[in-house]
Image (cartoon, rainbow, N blue to C red):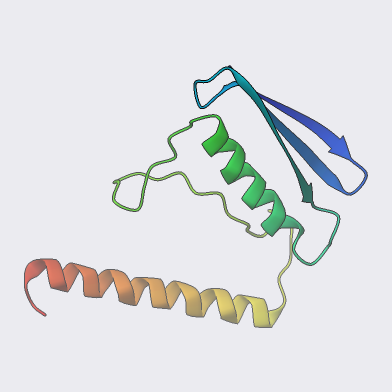
Length: 113
């Protein structure tokens, strides 16, 4: 049987995976991983990585790149956050790029490319 134990650490999270029937041979295997999330620069990146990995450990199907639906874990502005002008400009550019890509995708499906 595989069990997953999560606990807090002073600088993040600890994940301990225990398999009591490793490779079907009845051996015991333990793996301990520490997710450091106290770093302000990449804190959300570490949390996102943790969430994807724990989902895989639990066997949750989040969809794939080929599915019509895929659960994605992303970082975005808070509802009350007031972005700087540079951040707004970057968001507008990213959205324009996404629209451009979708228009190209549509044209290629119609055979116009």
